Length: 432
Image (cartoon, rainbow, N blue to C red; front, side, top):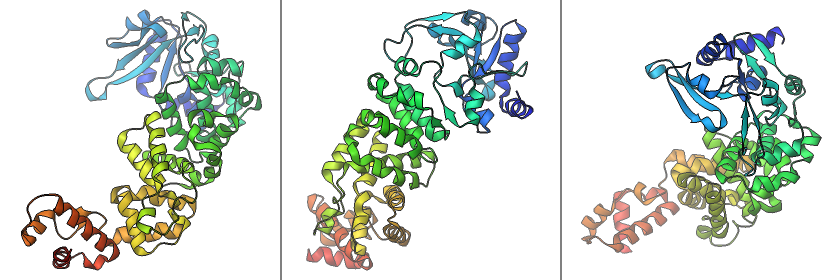
């Protein structure tokens, strides 16, 4: 281990993780940090969750700490609570183990405790994740060359790639995700094994696929992973409705940005699933109808989002942005742009604008931003009169007629924003 690696790891390991390792080491056990956090610390990235692996049996871990939650005893995992009050943190601790077959393509049918560290590392998915660090002795365990792979920007499976992928079908999704998030090139032998594991991927729960897809699309350059996913059949397995048009969207997805990590991922989902809509979905003579987008495509996209377990509000965001993504394919009057925004909704408009910018439709994005900043009314709730005001002015009882009048007024205001005054709207309503 180089001095630079030692310094990075020493600075990165949290105090609660170090304390757990100290207690176990003092009791005569081996205790190391493993996995993605070690990998990220070595790369100079901000590490995520830190996990501890130990030679101690779960019962021996439980006996040495005051508060331990048995989160996964069958697989050798407990959560040790460290600290007091609001500063209390949970540290996941797993006993070194070997694993039997994965009949469900997710979890091993059996585990064997008491194996050496190297065998524990051998069961992991990728060599860059099979690195362990002892924060007490400040030693590193890298039996398969994970640091060399990080230096070479290379992703290789541990052992026989097809075996690793068929043990847990989600590992093929993790491979394409790491290609994007860690900017690694997948080793040819590892990539060649992916098509043979697509059957295992098809058995993985949609919730787990959802999580990996979001992480992939939140990467700085998702196309690095999407190209591999398309080439190996992963994309067809998780999103069959995208068809052959998906590849044409990859460069667009890289350019879709703005907002936080959640916003970015959802907007890129919308940009990708725009492939479901026909390129001419926004043509036609009826501007008001065209501004609503392709209804058939919207239903297909919503069905895909349901299958992939997106929350209802996220599905709404994705569908609204995707169904008007092709609006830049034609010229619009200002009224037409307002109608697009009205269909999307003011709160969802930034999503559509981000997709338009990603597609290179900067003119439409800029016009939409001007309209939003100017405050043109886009919904009946933004009109200068309310339903109650109309009932008072026109002597109307509550009922459907009030809603009809508000819809008529909104149509007028979308055409003529200057007419959005109480006096003008009541006059229009009298004549309607």
